[in-house]
Image 1: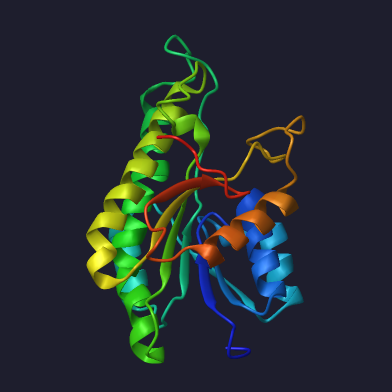
Image 2 (image 1 turned 90 degrees about the horizontal axis):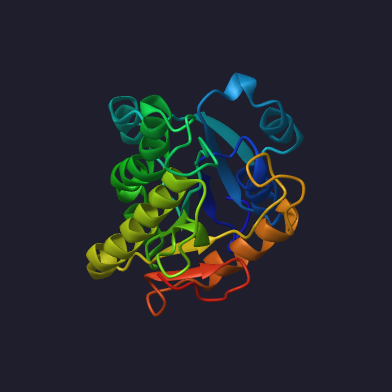
Length: 240
């Protein structure tokens, strides 16, 4: 670690967009960042970042495949202060008649956006607990990147399976917050804003830099007094 306030942070889906920017900003703050993605050799920007700073290391991790994740997590051997479940896909932007929403696309959406969160939390939980045990402080925190598109209160049309997957991801965050409260692990779900990424499009209102900066501030503020929160990158509460 680089200093007494430095953290060890793991971010899934760190090869692009918000995940990449969170990795960049977290490392710039002095944190040790483990940046995860499915195929590191295809993550040119992430590999460039790792060459620029020794605070970023890359871990090949496909959150959909538990049988591969289990030995990776078991052999990880390091405590975590923060685990950010950011990996996500948007397979189609249409509604119920959208032909892009075929069985393969639906499976990828649900396995990445929902099961991937569950598997990552399950297998890296011991490393969040180890952070507190090693330092005599609170265990690490779990942050799940969801979306206001998963809010039933704000239900809308389009991207129907993505909306359903983010509703499930938020539900997972709430359930994990309850389950892990006895172990003092704080859990939050976060809407990153409508961000100028490959997924959000260039007409989006928020830059990746602003979204990432806001999210990192919200993670820092997360604690047992706010566990189970669902809020956006500015701290505004999102209705379920």
